[in-house]
Image (cartoon, rainbow, N blue to C red; front, top):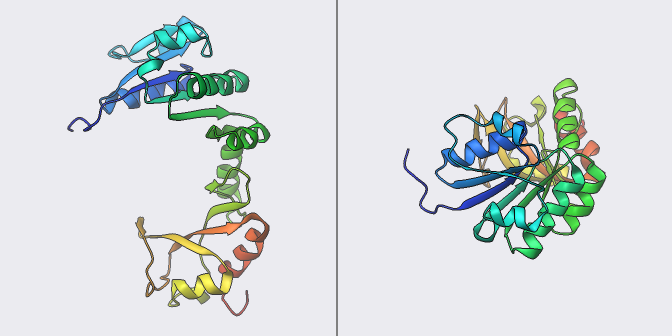
Length: 227
């Protein structure tokens, strides 16, 4: 595997399971990485051949961030176990040091929505886990693979009912009032065109407003006439 054309420096806050996995992934891609944690023992999660920088300290402390190379960093990820530490660190990285690519892990989904509106991309751990598990326990449940910061628009995966097989994707969009962003067919993604027909086993990845999600799910899981 060749090295990426553009090498960057990435700073990660939190050397838990997620942070250590991220650090290993960044290094495997050929980039330089520094990982911060208050507890030096946490660095034991890193492999023995890890060559990145280990920095013991508080993630939103200016000196700690500078030691980790934040001034030359292209990206910063705050994935410690504390919501407050993550969001404060993310804001410091963006607002004080001008890091363009910043993401924070947040456990409280209500906070995540607020911080998204402030321009800090977040991963709401509890919400994501809930939706993924719910979608596997109850396939008929409408779960979002993605939503905009306000939660108004969702991207969700729906397996259409047999009544849709052989009909054009465009008809699905017009009847259900959705946008089909992608079709998963035989395990591969397909960008639908004007003449794309729904096949048996297709999974439609549709963009829909949250207010209409349940209604659209019913239309697509049944035939167009039944829906």
